[in-house]
Image 1: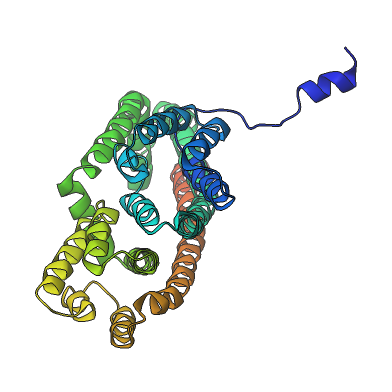
Image 2 (image 1 turned 180 degrees about the vertical axis):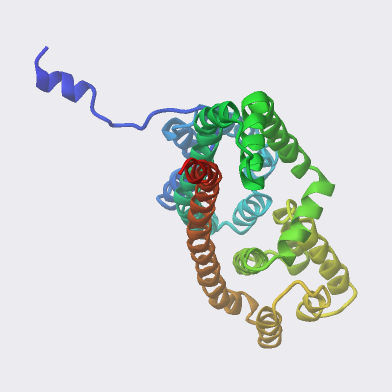
Length: 364
């Protein structure tokens, strides 16, 4: 076999397959489904093609099972409801609206645009946090290495000389002894604490407590509010524009914000108020969790009967504000981590050199 033939056989025609279902896999599915249906491909055939093209083996299994249920006469919406852990509730509701209205292609295009924006926002957040995370890991690693390997050598020297050590030196030596003697237990403790905290965060009490604390913090609270305003406006606009009634959209929003109990309760309150005949803007204002700009825009949309169009105009504004807060927080994290690393190393070096200078002065 020639080199050219070998290279052709190993051409990267398809990406490497994986098991879990990522947000990119979902985006690819809805994008392919929208393109196929818009081109006139029957739904069942479109599902089989999308399953074949997916790089996730788990997504392939899900789509093949969904296709079998559609072939048996079920609607796509009902077939997708079995996999609510993979697909957002408002995605499934929009699919149902597309089926009922006969305008599946247009609805899927709008849904695909929103999922793409979610992917871009998530990539931006992850990309912004990569450098601070690496910097933090390096800082902690350097400090632990100094306490574990460097400081004990000086501790032995100080002990042999019998010098009287200042308080800062005794503190650093005690910290070094703790790291050397209990470092392994500390590592397992940190790992166990992180796992326990993650499990607690999945409970109702954990999500509610942490969500409430974040909302009250400077910068992080602002970012959480802007994120909620963006998700609310973009999702509500998409649902209303696709023909979903207001009461049903509020029900879907409760599901969208299921991991944020504070805002989930706010939408439940708004839903009860709207059902009692009150306006949506006044109902949102009662919760004190929506910005005055958002409630005024919603009120304007209700009065002009153009709520979806008005929300479409305000969603990009909150997206830009969210991106601005993300950039500001990451820029603040970098100097804080550098100051922490520099200050800690300076403290350790100072604790080591003060006794050495004292002993040198005594000898002179």
